[in-house]
Image 1 (tube, helix red, strand yellow):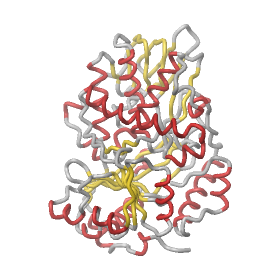
Image 2 (image 1 turned 90 degrees about the horizontal axis):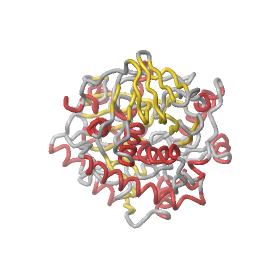
Image 3 (image 1 turned 90 degrees about the vertical axis):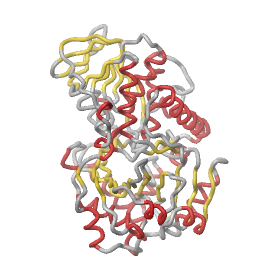
Image 4 (image 1 turned 135 degrees about the horizontal axis):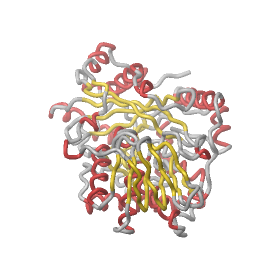
Length: 476
């Protein structure tokens, strides 16, 4: 077996240890929210009524609420959240807002080849509308349409970049080793493709908080600390119950992401995979000069176990990814977020990427659970006689796709036949994950195989080839 650049150019252990000494175990984005975006909101109590109840105050739920209010400004919308607005995946992701609604072109092409051109167009239209909506509603999410840089850090990945350019649009450009290193100074970069319009970077928690405030300004009610415990559709309306109250509504949207579904049919459809993140202290002007990165793109490398990183508006660098950890039993647990070996590995890889930043420290370290589906992008549907709609399974690329999901669910609840609802991607459900212990065995064997491929020139073993053949393969 070979090695990766992160093993060949490993920094000193003292550099890694120093960088993590004062890192707080907490989410930078949530800590960075101003007080006016974190108001005290009531818990649901007693029996209330609404036209539409949204379960979950993350991106999917908040976008659905806002889009519903655009369609019908007089609609009575109630949003019910188990904790606080945007506290889970929506407040702790990397802040990459991609156009793709299929988790990348290759994944979409392999699953829906006849629809790929439509899916690509709809994804870009969705990102354009996302940007326009934030401007219209006055949501300051620090949105920057800077694109994304896909970088090769091993020789075999250069061929993958060339293949990527074969279907890239006019806004994409190939950078050779000299060009990419002139733009961003990293000894690991061998080449890159810059997609200049397909991605934005933003402040995740500000996005969630801003959407919630915009919804409230338009008449929606947000209930926090109100975990939904039941969904009763035996009567003429849907009854959504919590420990202290209930909401009676005509229609319900389930936007619970990685958490166990209120619908039995969906409980094997996703698994929680934990992702780990570091945030640096603000860089000095001299440190930024040493790095470059003046175009401020989001960056992802081409490995199966990849890293993602981006600058912030206050001059920090977020660096995350690589480890993707599944725990037996599909459980979402706070203790799974504390994994020192993952942060040490990320710190090591950070200083391999930017050795000129030795001495820089991290202020925050955190983790979050990704709702992973077998098709690696969202699935959609309705239940209970068409009165309940759901979307889940975004698999780490839900920031932009959540808006598209909101439109789909509202179309489905209205019984409308639209371009979105006619997509095979929307009409057909993916395969579920198997129950335990098969799920843990399969997921962890796949993770081991992906790591092995990264150490073997990208060559996929029999397990990965078999998964590819049956439509369960994934290359990152």
